Length: 390
Image (cartoon, rainbow, N blue to C red):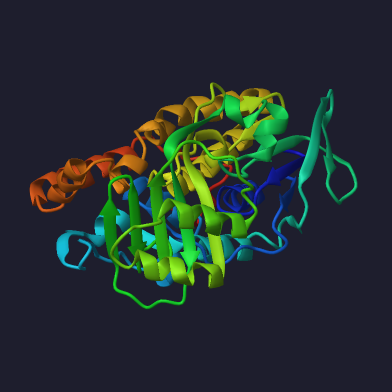
């Protein structure tokens, strides 16, 4: 790639991971990362990596040891009844994979390793994309218009780039019948999860100090209004047992609240002209358990294909899709909603029973590992320095 300018939308995991590899490609690439948030988002829910493929990419990035050092550690989580009596235990390796780390910690780690080699623009967002013969003309909410050779949408399941380049979100994002909430409450509680039909509340687990999943019709709400999120959660959990009344009483004073749908992205092609999608923007499945792994592996493959093609998107983007689409099918393997918040008492009991059967659990963990390693990871000479081994 010679004198190639790349704009990446999104500074969470996929975007900075791609920036890292583009900076290592050994060619003249100028990378700009634009992020809507005013600062890097720290903290947040835990994300995890599973299997040899994920570990290999993290190792090739030189961050595996640091990820392990910062890991939260897989924590066993009790499933309890309304009186707090233990019904079953979800082992830490089931929820936490091989290594688990807070999303914000991973984002900070990637930012630290890319900030010197690329431009970060916080507190801004893309407002239009116009492809021309020589690039993509981009306008921003705050910054001056600029033209880039390539644009990458690494901005999550509600991708702004996908909306601008491909079409309305409703055409590509399928609502799966549940919502989830992450709430930062001042509580110190062992990792425990409680179910009633169609709703789940958890404390002290890997996602957040308080974690909620509930069945619902599709809601019309502002994704950036935490006060509205609090009202929706209060309505959804009215009358619930266990410690939920205490949680709802504390909800108005919560430091941070985040509410979103459990949804899947379904899109026929990852690229359109000079614009390409990466991570959840292309193959998201909320709480599906593979998002962070798909993000870092996808970034490696996309950067590798661009390096091999000398920056020619007409070759690289189809190569990325061909190499990755089969692997990304894991993001279409059902929805986490019915598992976390089963619809009936019988289904709750069946889910709990599964965690009491070691052989069945071992089979599920083995299947998860197979999904996580289901790609032949290429060695891209343009990315891997001689001192870096697999």
